[in-house]
Amino acid sequence: MFPLQFCGKKDFRFLLWDNESMSKASSDLTNAVIAHIYKAGGYAWRASSVGVFDTKQARHRAAAKKGVADVLSIYHGILIAVEIKIGTDRLSDEQEGFMRNIEHHGGRAIVAKTEDQFKEAWAAAIAGI
Image (cartoon, rainbow, N blue to C red; front, side, top):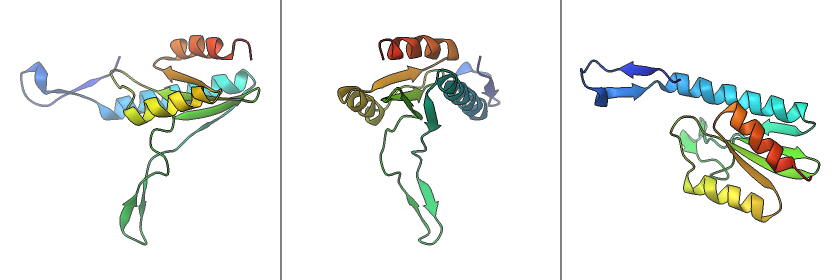
């Protein structure tokens, strides 16, 4: 599913994930998630939680909040956070905490690994709303 790069060694331990392909897969899944939420009657956006380089101060500024889900959405007044995970990628401690806080305050949290898995999780999350 995800292409590997060969690093010139004749040993499988030197195979690396092709980060460009992983990034494209993540972006494609994120776009599919947002499109599905819109089709279902919700409102969704990609939540950028990556820091930025401040050219005036010549330094990197961290994001305001670590662990924010990749996609935030509203469906019938309920916040639904969707974290995109591709391959063996796992939730960080900050991401787990963010998802728990969303659920603690009445929202829903979904970890999306594939489009089909997301659609099933979405259906379960909005059941009864």
